[in-house]
Image (cartoon, rainbow, N blue to C red; front, side):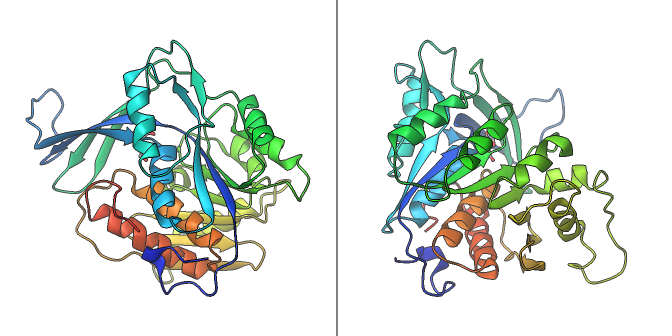
Length: 337
Ligand code: FRU
């Protein structure tokens, strides 16, 4: 199995792995305006540029994963809900995924939907930060039962990755747990929204092989986990993330063996492997930020590609930080392999 080009040299012999990645989550339109700096409330600003593109965690991660897995026996399918193709925005979104070789045929299509979820994004030239305001535009979430139909119609799903969207994800994880070990794909989950409560999140962790936490979620939940930043120790030892990951793995009643991963922007990324009890840290490369929209989705996709191709945890973190760094330093999600 050839290795993902952006990660060349990082892997040992790749694990032979065939089949389909199924990525579940949001697929939306991103209406992005580049501005010099974030505007004051009640001011008027002329944008430096405007782009309309396909966004959403699922769509972004799919596009990066498809690039990294090109020329391997692993393929990428998107899963989620979308208006049928009679809606021009839905047609635009689906076509832009298909151009990357992503299979969109397994999505739940909705007739006469009111619209495609849409985000207005302000990209600040001064800082590279992205500020997002989004709306579902009346589109419901995917019916969890739709996953049953997809699994019945396919026999080659090797890995299911979920963005934690409520409601529905817990039900889908349970559905996968009930499959026999020979028909059970690898399962990964992204916990991104800081508003997600621990009591909802913890039972899901033991149903997964890999879990990604956003830095926003870790910052919001460190108090509930009774973890504080330590004044003593090096920057890594004193950081709140590795201690939160350890705490998340060992919650009473909900212990998990899943590999837990947390990217921390320009600092780098952490992981904790409950099986070995080991912590891992990879510093990010310094880059001049140009466009950080989708950087987290890129990090997740590169981690998935690396793990599927046989990388160890340190190799996976190096690969994911390298690809995410390259993304932040350029506009858009093309040319990341
Ligand atoms: C970035 C992103 C955007 C989208 C927003 C909400 O991570 O996926 O593309 O507008 O988050 O899903």
